[in-house]
Structure formats: C-alpha cells, structure tokens
Amino acid sequence: MEERDEKKPIILIVDDTPGNIAILNSFLKGQYRTKAAITGAEALDLAMGKEAPDLILLDIMMPDMDGYEVCRQLKRDARTVDIPVIFLTSKSSVQDEQKGLELGAVDYIAKPPSPPIVMARIKTQLYLKSVRDFLRNKNVFLAAEVERRTRDVSMIQDVAMAAMGSLAETRDNETGGHIRRTQYYVKALSEEASVMPRLKNYFVGDAIELLYKSAPLHDIGKIGIPDGILLKPDRLTREEFEVMKKHTTIGRSAILAAEKRLDSPDSFLRIAREMAWTHHEKWDGTGYPQGLSGDGIPVSGRIMGFADVYDALISKRVYKPALSHEEAVAIIGEGAGTQFDPRLADVFQGISGRFKKIAQDFRDSEVVSDAS
Image 1 (cartoon, rainbow, N blue to C red):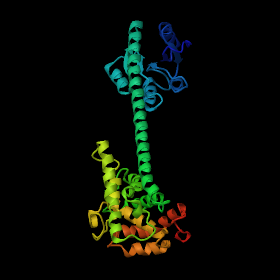
Image 2: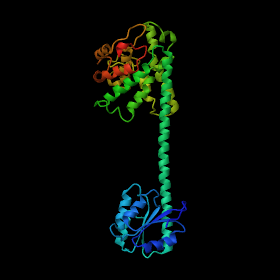
Image 3: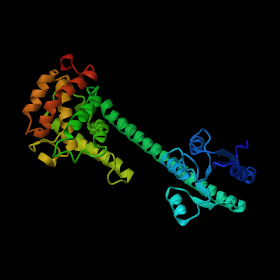
Image 4: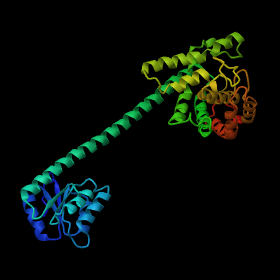
C-alpha cells in the first residue's frame, strides 16, 4: 500500500470500507505515499507513529469510533494537532459539515469523491501546511536566535564588568578577595531585602542579578587615585583622605562615559554607576561625596555600604587588625540610623550568618581566620 519515495507527502486514508480505500489509493499513489486504516483507533496509532502523515482523509461513519471523535483526539494531541484533516463522507448536510469544521477539519468532501476535486483539495491543504510549517519553524528559529543573542549580550556584560572591576583590584594590593566577597554580600542582603514592603518595588525583574554583577565596579574609581595615597602603608592624613574620597566621583564619571557609548537611557551600568558614586553616603547625611541622607541614597548604594564596611572590618590592614565577625556585626548594629539604613540594618542582623559563611568561603590572606 505504501510507496517508498520518501520525498512524497504521506496521505493517511481512514475508512472502514476497504473498497473505498482502494479507490482513493488508485489515484493518489502515483503522487503521494499512502497509508490506510479501517478503524479510528488504528488511524490514531498511525498518526502518532514514527512517520506521521502529512494529511488525513477521514471517513465519518465508522464503528466503535467515528470520524468526529478521531478528529477530536487528533486536535487534542500536540503530536497531531497540525496535521490537516479532510472529511470524506456521505454525510453531506450543512450541519455535518459545520460540525466537522468546528472540530478542526480543514475541508469537507462528499462521497462519491471526484478524483480531480480530491487531488486539488489535497494539493491546496498540503501547500497551506507547508506555509504554516515554514512560519512555525521560522518563529522557532527566531526565538532561539533571540535567546542566543540575549545570552551573548549578558555574557558581554559580565565580562565587561569583571574586566572593569579587576582594574581597581590590580591597583590596590590589599583588595584580595574583597571584590568577590562583596558581590555575594550584596546578593545575600538584596535577596532578603526584596520582601520588605518599602523596598520590594525596587527588586523587580533582574534587579538582584544586576546588583550582584555591578558590585565589582563599586571601587572602580580607585584607578584615578595616586599610588602614594592608594598604597600608603599607614593611615591617611585629612588632605590625603579628601583625595581618596574622589574615587566615588571618578568611578561615576568612568561608568557614565561607558554608558554614553551605549546610547541607552537605562543601561545595565546604571546600578554600577549608582554604587560607585553613593556607597560611602550615610543615612544621617554625613557621608560623601554628595551628603545624601535617608531614602535619598539609592538602594544600590545603601546595600553596597553594608557589604563594603563589613568586609573592611573583618579584613586586616597595615594600620589595623582584622575584627571578628561578631565585632563587625556589633559595630554595624551601632551604626543603624546614623551610618546605615536602620531597616536594612535589621535585615543584615538577621542574615549576618550568611555574611560570615561568605567570608569563610572566599577567605584570603587578608582576612584572618577568626573572621570565619
């Protein structure tokens, strides 16, 4: 019954009368490959088999399972929903035809069939199916391409941020794992703060991921600080500290220049720019460089402030010993409402154990063992 030319479309003929199948097959077999079924159940098995038909000629009046039910099941299954069904039957009333089309059939031919009409209708429906298949495949391809390019863009963003962040790290011989630790501190605090009623609107979409990715750039401005100050093995004088404070505005300017090249009003670097510029602002307005206070300080800067201070406290410097985790937590608690957002300070207290674990996981020679 089945022609072997694999380039020809497959037509499944479903009829409980073998003679009708033979008639249809006689004028289809030269142009198409054909398969046949004499029951609805057999038709469904063939339609869902390894080599699905390209079109189904379906009789309505069959025992056990009529053509309407076969069509209904075909259209319910994702594997067969797109196979065109042409009803070929002696039921020729308007109501019969309407019912068949409502079930998802694409055409309705009355018996006895006219070979030219059957061939013309099949040709038309196969053409329309090929167009639909092309568009569907095109859409799948375009969706995959969009996903690939989005993934590439995200990778470029990650690499760009990591590369820019490493510039600051190479200038400061005391940084060590500071960049990596602060990234995870920021992520931990952001995840917990994202459920706070007054802050949850900030943490929408990929905000937490952007905060995490942006954290390495918070000290990018240190590339503009003279070595004599940045690498001084002692406490800074007041004048030197004033120069050091400029790393916030230098960082903002550097990132802003990069943003302008992107020609985007809301680039992925916006949060990084906010962090670099505002992570030394204080809740009571005594910070720098702008003297911002309270909710006037961007959330990104407030969160980075916790990460930056905590890591500085538990890290050894030439001018101070490393403090323990408990000492660092106590100092940050004392700064709630003055240096730190008191609401975020409560969140920090609740998850300080996660900060301790991060410090332990990414400990380096600059973080002493009792900080873990």
